[in-house]
Length: 123
Figure (cartoon, rainbow, N blue to C red):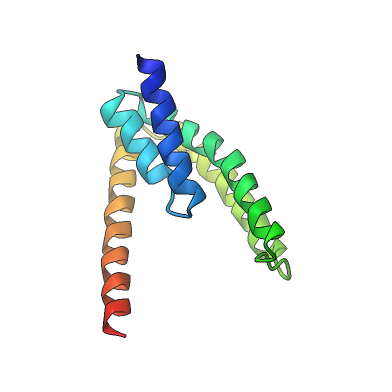
């Protein structure tokens, strides 16, 4: 039964990630709160799951002519370096700090969403 729950969590987070909504905002809470996975494992799983999802999305955007590659290395190189650095730091941090940091991130994301929704409605 737990395999089916893990499969469903992966499916729905992949679906949201493919639509650009950020599958990790679903996957990490489901893994930690619902399925009882440790914070470090949940966040590492999210990072690993992101790679094929990002590659697939990138290919789809490229095939539709929606990908602009001019100046991309100015984004890719710092993103890769900070991702590796962030992963190394996350390994050293206690799970409680990761959990609280992710919670703060989700709150900030929600606040940003409320304000951007409000600004669009006012236009």
